[in-house]
Length: 512
Ligand code: AHR
Picture 1: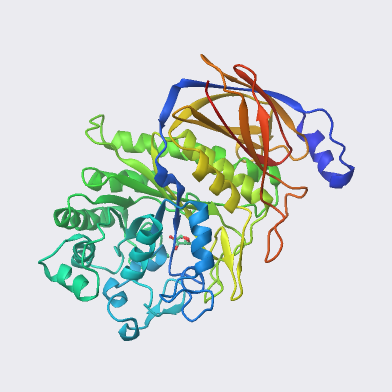
Picture 2: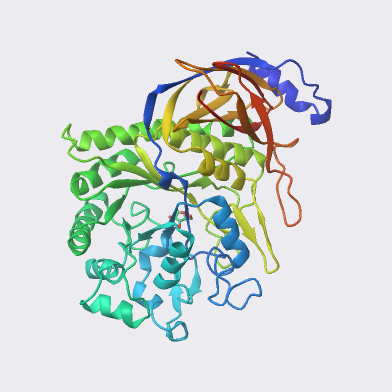
């Protein structure tokens, strides 16, 4: 293992002068019998909020030559399909806390434009319930609707469920049919508000007030459709709510018998421009997941009649395009680089490594706004963070496996001892996938990978996301960071593989 002083000295050298010495050595072991839990496909979700150019100018761009006759951007739809989005949250976010869903139904030209106070704009309401649910249906994505538990009422939430899910005969079912949709969409996943712990939230409440209010809403929503799955607003970004443990505890005390998920949010960043500290941030995520799982267990008092899972329904790197001055149309337009892509891969590893409790995760967001897809009027490009998410979504399915790791490590200022390698693995039938982030800035790490109690079939597909510069970004017409394909061959139960410095690698093979 090299010391912090050694790699700090290495950082001072220009990248081209940093001669690659021998690789550091590590060991990885997987055992098909040691399973953490099933990986829920909904951990590969995204989020579309009425915010900046996420929906209008992103997913939906009426009048654009790039849009179809309904207003959906064709190029964005293709990128969403290729990303393999499984689950899409809408309409917010902070936006949802003053959203009147009835403003967004009926003929588009007759819908009212409303003052939008979460982000300081005007909401046209031209994209509403039908536009969202028709989109997810066409793409085979599971929709997740976040109801207004800020300024909204219990009846509004209940009637929204009725409008979407009741087949016929009721006032809301007839209204939906009158608006052109005969059969219900049957939306299963509903949020009981967004970040209700935050003073920035319209209709912000104390945990006790929120717990009582959400409980009554939850009852009405389930009595309207017993098949709905409810997600309570747990604590927002950990840093923003110092008492995040207390909030979750109190909310669960009211809602534990009425919800299936507790929502948590996390946004991370590298404001201090400390590469190694930033790359270690997933340690904290892992800790917080385990703490939240403990809070849920404690709330259930040992009587685990039905599980309550964690929904990380907002997560990403977000620190540049942030702050109170961020109001208007071109907001939260974060441009991502290679180090962000590596952090995203490590965060996905944390979700997979906690697959028994994290059953929902939505990268925030999907287009333009802190997003993997970025557009302008003439086209689009894929940001660096698109690639790790796409590789996980396509390849890391089935059961999450416990992964043994013996790797050299370093001391992160904030997050303590951190191995250079960060790993997760999964087994889907005979197909085995490993996701490996090499956090080392300038040294490769070689691993002896072993499968216990069996053997590999031989050939492995390898996809690597890396580049010469950790600050490299993609742009219109320039793809500096993407996934590069290669292959590897295992021999019996072992595979030796060299992971390049500052890289994310997906290895996919099969058990013999
Ligand atoms: O995703 C951007 C915003 O971040 C969301 O609207 C809010 O829920 C969070 O604070």
